[in-house]
Amino acid sequence: MANTRSAAKRGRQTLRRSAHNRSINTHLRRLQKQIRSAPERTADQIRAAISAIDKAAKSGVIHRNAANRRKARLNKTQAAN
Image (cartoon, rainbow, N blue to C red; front, side):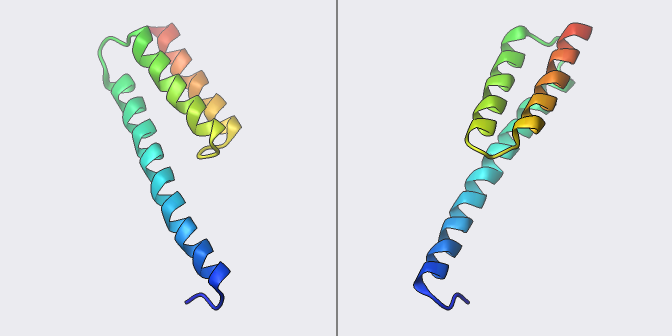
């Protein structure tokens, strides 16, 4: 239980942010799984996933280097295809 009003507010903010971040991470995971399991990967699918990854990194949901790593792996699957 929070002892001060500011700590209570911080707790509420944390709950909201973690729910928002979780939904973004779930969305990214779903996009990446769709691309990996697709028999034919299109450039549009990969472009949409990279855009979503960039937006997540920009807002701080995932780390910048993690975003770069994910994009590199997606581009590698595109080159292999």
